[in-house]
Image (tube, rainbow, N blue to C red; front, top):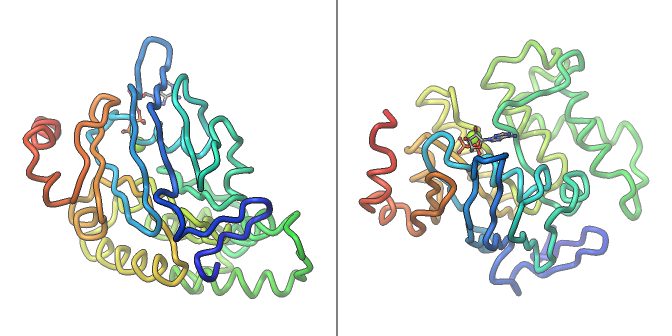
Length: 263
Ligand SMILES: Nc1ncnc2c1ncn2[C@@H]1O[C@H](COP(=O)(O)OP(=O)(O)O)[C@@H](O)[C@H]1O
Ligand SMILES: [Mg+2]
């Protein structure tokens, strides 16, 4: 991904020519009578880190599911690199560089850590123009990705034997294999110690720079989200109640109140 050009199949876009990588417009999502999202709109600028915060049940994961095609919104649209992608399927969107991690990582437990990354690579490369890479090259690349997330020593361990922290890293490795343009991270810091959080933020910073990524991250760990995000969007009961620079948002009385009674 050089020069900001996203050269995936038919989607050729110069990131620098865009105001937004993702635009979410008036998204509504209902589950029966429950309104999980009620008219949420915002945009994600090229190369920024946008943090999404809000109490449990605010609609954050539902929003990711809508953006990445796992759920179809009842109203509203999602625009990615200038293209309306509302209702497009997840596998199609991930091939276009829209990659998300899952709050609960579910690796193929019986397969090795390396094999889990290989599956991601095979999927990402299949059908791509000029895909002539042999298996040994893919294995080499999978190992490189495991090195990036410091899991190379677990390459041959069954994924089912990984600790929580290691599973989170494998989840990250899996999406890096897709060569994403945008990384959507759903609570990748949950359950980590304070030291592990610092390590993880450093890692994400490095990956973001190296791969020239735009990052959207849902996170409860305030230390991480305040230090890593360029901007924050705050959801509460399915609505956006605040948006802006982290230090401004943290002082916003509506935001303070939304979090009161949480812990
Ligand atoms: N597939 C689903 N079916 C029914 N209700 C759901 C579903 N997914 C989420 N919800 C509900 O929608 C609301 C928002 O959930 P979610 O997006 O997971 O919140 P968050 O990620 O902010 O904690 C919650 O009340 C949750 O129970
Ligand atoms: Mg969630």
